[in-house]
Amino acid sequence: MREQINEGSMVFVADGCEGIGSVREIRHGLPELLVYIENAGDFVVPMSAVKAVHSGKVILDFDHLDLRLRNAIRHARDSEDPNYLSPASTEDE
Image 1 (cartoon, helix red, strand yellow):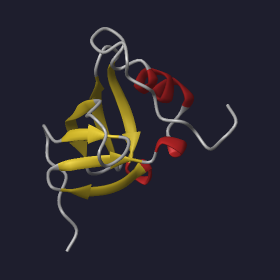
Image 2: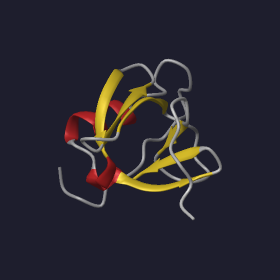
Image 3: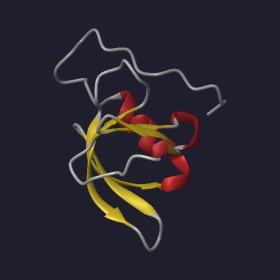
C-alpha cells in the first residue's frame, strides 16, 4: 500500500540527503503539491514529479522538476551550510 502524503511532510531530492523543504498543501483535484523550499518560498510540484513517499518523507524526482524549482533546491542550504552540494541533474539545462 502506498503511503499517503501529509501536510508538513518533509521533502527530499534523494533518500539519505537532508530535507530541502516541506509540504504546505495537497491539491488533490489538480493533482499537485504546494511545497515550501528553504530560502526560496513556495513552489507548485506536480504529483508526476514525486518519486517516492515513505516514512513521512516525500522524495522528488529532481530531473522532472522545472528549472526554477531545481535552481531553488540547489540554493536551499546556501545560508546555513557552506559545504552543501546540490544534486546533479542527468539532463542538460
